[in-house]
Image 1 (cartoon, rainbow over the protein chains, first blue to last red):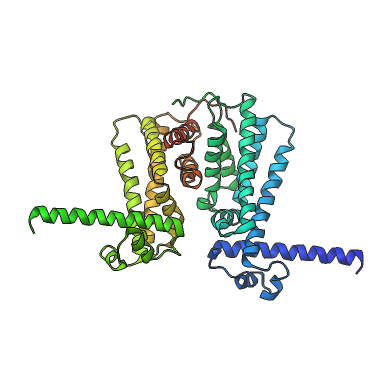
Image 2 (cartoon, rainbow over the protein chains, first blue to last red):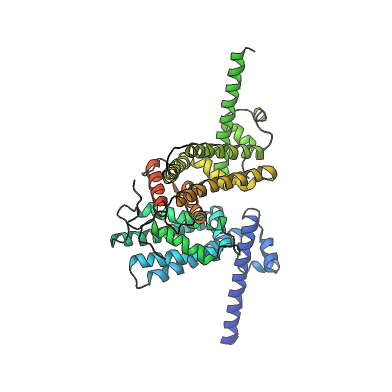
Amino acid sequence: LTVDESFKRAKARRNRESDVIEAAIAVFYAKGYSAATIQDVADAVGVLKGSLYHYISTKEQLLHKVLRGSHEQAQAIMAQVSELDAPPLERLQTYLRLIHLWYLEHPERVSVYFNQQHHLTGESYAEMRMQNREFELFLRGLLSEAKRTGALADDVDPKLATFFILGALNSLPRWYQPGGPLSRERVAEEFSLMATRMLLPGSGATR
Amino acid sequence: LTVDESFKRAKARRNRESDVIEAAIAVFYAKGYSAATIQDVADAVGVLKGSLYHYISTKEQLLHKVLRGSHEQAQAIMAQVSELDAPPLERLQTYLRLIHLWYLEHPERVSVYFNQQHHLTGESYAEMRMQNREFELFLRGLLSEAKRTGALADDVDPKLATFFILGALNSLPRWYQPGGPLSRERVAEEFSLMATRMLLPGSGATR
């Protein structure tokens, strides 16, 4: 193999693996992990079942790859926001907008992440729990930092505010209809604005 | 049968049915609807399987009763709030506090409602969809009314704000740990306060 040929083959393999992952997301979303089979995924990719075993050896491994890939995409957004040279509140607002947009752009991926994750076992399950925790702590960290700089209301509890915001965020795939009257940009902007507003000082809400 | 005996028997039957429903919630929560059996529920109540057929004829009918009962409890809270002689914003705040408390007091019931509802079919499924819609529209109505009286920020979108608040509310059973360091009252108060705060005018959040 020349270097060029070897590069092309590696690239083709990555493309094919990404096709397999996308097909697995569609199948797990439509049928649920329990009812889905490797055969369903092979049919969705349009290949023979045997050729999937180049990429994965079990259905659970496929789910694990789907979830890890999803977390890596979220990590890329977290990294991008961490590297922003901007005050904490601005980083928080940017993160909220980007993560809402990402959810709205990948409703099936996000839905599989949350609704099928309990099917993982052993090490894969432990890894997924760590990912959930990293995701939660990132937002909580942004909130704590913004609070320390005095940008948030004094009585904001970063932990509870994180649960509140992530609860609203995680609900998006449940009700959002792609192609419906509400654009992704509009929903991402409104949700980010509501989340920010509940954190800032100066509203009339009292205990 | 005397009237008294007949009354006692009817009461005993209601108590027993309520035991069956509570057992079904515990079983559906622990095993998931798909894996659960009528035998599991009978074991949890401590009766022979045959005696459950006085109350239900299929597993799906049992799930249907669980979901209908849950919605009736939510309806009782909605009715109580509707009858309050108070301005719209105050009714909204009262509703938020009561519904958060109810969720926190019944985490297994709420979790079964949301995670197992897709197993219903036909008429039961249609009824559950109507219940979801009624629940959503009640909060949306409170928000719209409070907005009309000028109590909310001009740019609050009642529909999107409803999705945001219900998303956060529905996430409670996912993370809340009964008996943990956070009391139900504290979480209900904080969540209600955050929800209210994001709706009120005067915060510094801008687009």
